[in-house]
Length: 180
Image (cartoon, rainbow, N blue to C red):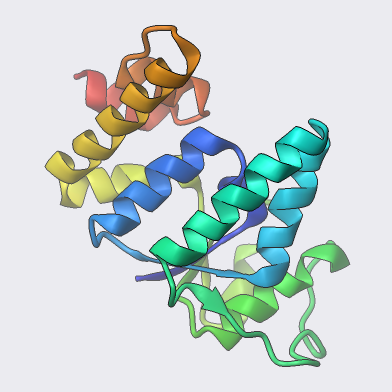
């Protein structure tokens, strides 16, 4: 499955790490555009210059880890496309240009299922999407969640277990599945 990752799932860190860990396990193919990566960097800049610098370093690492993921969106690709928020049309254009199967976003209101279906796309909710990956490959998702919790513990100095970290990352259903 080819999935365009909206900027709101690339930033924050924990969700991005879990998603890309699952992609590295071969559970789906992540896609993004340069503009989506720039939106992530600008969002991180709200934390100050250091936040933007960290984001740009993470973006460079992401590009190296997934060299085929960045879509080239032809000029004018947005013409003829519509979404309730004109600022999100570039995401739809990237998905269409990249022949994606889905757009992964928290932003349900601005990506109506009917509009996406006209372009052969579906909108995926991050928590439900990760649960579907867990149902297909539970061991892989457990490994990815454990690695994210280990990294959070190492960086914060606070002990994090996977379910608690996933709940904090707004992934309550996946957290419950990993708890039980």
